Length: 120
Image (cartoon, rainbow, N blue to C red; front, side, top):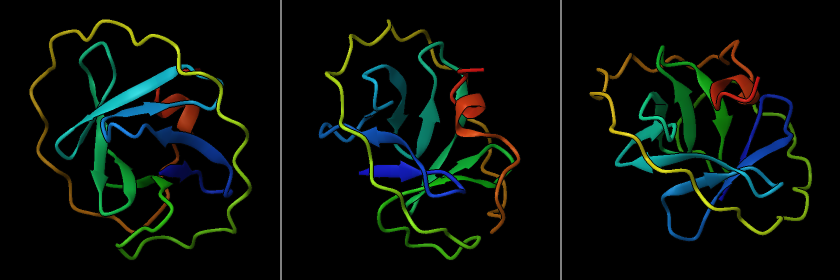
């Protein structure tokens, strides 16, 4: 599954293992545990809910190929680039306690995918 930003640009994809998110250049972005999105340092970044990756405030950061929730207007999706060979994942640090899920907000987050995944 590919996840797109608010402009329709492909940002990350989910490996076939259903757990790890990668950038198209092969760098690991984050991982999923149940419905939570985590950085490898153990920080919870947000939530994966019915095709949307949301920030901790409940706003939409990325949408998947087939989002199932109503949300903000989705742009036309751009063609994903070729996927580079996935690089080794960093060691997973101890996860911080999962936060309470914020109410779903059908608006776009002000956080870019790069900032969401800690690439700024």
